[in-house]
Image (cartoon, rainbow, N blue to C red; front, top):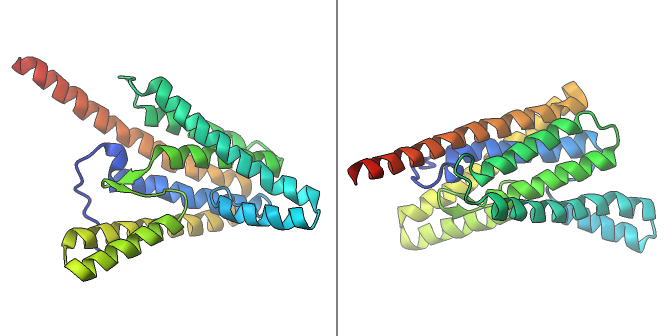
Length: 234
């Protein structure tokens, strides 16, 4: 399957970096569903459906259970925006690396939290930061923590390829479908490791995000090198 990894945009937009981001996204969902009370960290549509069902049944405890991750997701999205506004021009660290560092610290802290509701709130917060921060792969708009948008976009690109025979549409479709497969693998891995090592399994997600954090230093290094070359040429 040709995923055309030679995209030359920012390192945060490359498929190689996205692999670890998306694996982490699938892992997080499986983790909260598997050992934190059956709540989805990423799929807020499912949480809203369950919240609404409980609301109409007057099951207030369940309403609170599902309202917490939804509200935390909203706060996480706002937090990611604030980080970008505050550190968007930072020269030493890319603002996306700062978001990743925050995510890693929060997820590591989740291992020490016994309350499922607090843990779910924190993972949903992290998920929102991630989906707000990493929006493109190979220049294509995508979601790193859910599949429905990627499925729609992949099907659309495939349809365009069938109609036009333009291979760029095929490459785009394969990228989207590849992201879905990677997400599914991350979810499966998360489910398996959660059964084996329990609540500490979320540390694997931290490790995946840390790899992406380190990869982004390559982008910073290249940009600084180009800036130095321009100054030398002047």
